[in-house]
Length: 59
Length: 427
Image 1 (spheres, each protein chain N blue to C red):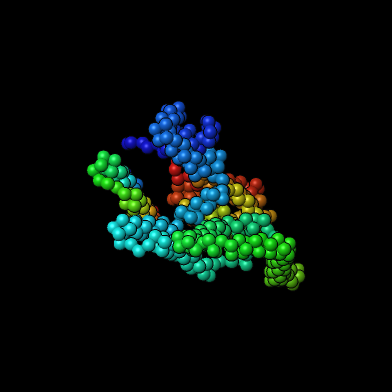
Image 2: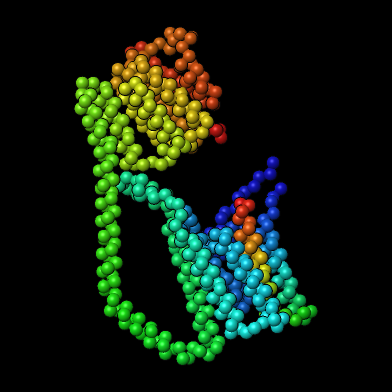
């Protein structure tokens, strides 16, 4: 069975979360200020970078 | 059983390129027609108001061209490798981004002091962290001085030294970029702080004066500094040459001159003289050409040469070894070396008086073939007594036990040839 690439999985989930926030903002379900949008994007990128850095141990 | 076909690596297909081959390379990677990818890209470019074009331009330098694959990395690739590959740096960037996210959230929640103070502080802290990491990386650690153990004036050695120490060069370039980035961050933080507090106006004149004075000084001092740099480089080169000469003199004294003295003392024994000369030749060649893989004990060719040298030293019979190619010294290869040694011992014992013994070894694609030839009287294979186990067990039997073959060709008066073959394990 093919192994799951954890970095890709986490990156996909993080991007989906950011995309979800943007969709909710576009549909006026929430009001996303530039600061919060930037924070969400930075957090998503940070999680991806940390996962990628930690994943190097397993390779 | 399912079969998997490895997809080609993503490279720019310059042969079928319209601009830079990014889309053609992507199509090849995905296994679809490039036209489809191009149509999709045009639609995407319209749909994203041209943002896709920006992605194309960014991807251009990051994706290597077909003809660049296998070449030494370019400066940009080295920079990217230096900046992006270390795991520590990615973790640090991740922590930094999460901190930034937290700061933005605090700012939105109103738990905040002032933009004019916090952001310059964040920038300065990031720059200082990079510089601290940089200074820690520059602390001296244990290192192997390849130049100190390498013989001088040898192209092969220079290549070996360069191959043995590639990392410091790359690491040095990456460290420089990182250090420069850290300095830029700290300076940027200072400027941002001054600008945010309206203090830059007064400082502008001072900065302009400093820049003009620096430029004038640079113009005045440039020729002297340039000459000083050249003189220092020349002096360093001369010092290195002088050290090389001293090392060469020491080695020649310790090896060649000592052997020549020994040869003068043994002038009445031609075989001993020949043996000493050949031993010295081997040692000198090994020192001059410095083949590290052969000395490390992982090379079949090196092991064959070692075995021949030992038999030559033990029996005083010259053995000429020609090795083409090389293989890793695994268990089967070690058996081949042992069988070759036995064949050489026999040749040295029974045919050593007739002249040098020749070893020809050919090793490629996992296959190894060794010929051991002597110019002795030869023998009748059928007349070998059954209790003589050297030939049957140590050569033929040993090769067969390890999946190889041994063929002995000899007849009285025509010398002997032993052919040892190890086929590739994949067959």
